[in-house]
Length: 203
Figure (cartoon, helix red, strand yellow):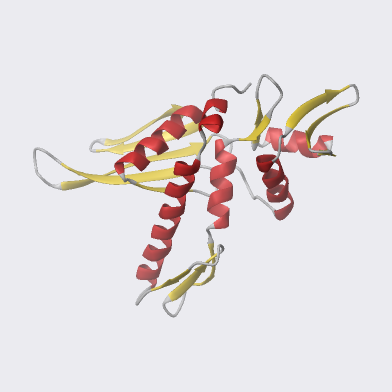
C-alpha cells in the first residue's frame, strides 16, 4: 500500500492507494505529459500546471505517493538479489524446514527471503510466483539515478554516468531533475502488461 497526497487549490488531501492504482496514476501522468520522478524511498512525485478558469492564473498541482513502509537503504547485496529476481523466473518455495525464494538453480537463504518479504521489496502471487513490488522498482530506479558527484563549478554527475552542466547550481539541479523525470517516464512506459496484471494477483 502507498500513502497518496494530492495538492490542490485548497490544500492537501491524503489517502491510501494500492499498487495498481499507483501504476494507473503514473500511466495517466505519462499520457498527459506530466513531470514525474521516482523517489529513493520507493514512491513517486507527479507535477503539472493548469489554468484556473476563474482567475486565468497558472496554478501548480501535484500528487505524491510513498509506500507505507519506506524501503530504507538498498545496499549492493540487496540490489543484486532484486536484480536477479527481476530477470529470472523466481518462485516462493515452501519446504518442511525452510521458506525460500528460488530462481534457476539458486535459492536465496531463508533469512534473506524473510527480510525481502518483510521489507515489502517482493510480492508473491497465488501461484507462488515472485516479483518485485512497484515500490522496489521505483526505489531501484531512483537509486540508479542519484547525484553521485560534482555539485560545484557548474556540473554534477548522475550515478548512471549522465553529466549535467549549467551556469549555476540551480541550473545544474534543474538539468538533473529533468534527466530523472525522463528516465522515470521511460520506466513507466516500459512496464509490461504482464507486470501490470500481476499487481492485482498478489497475496
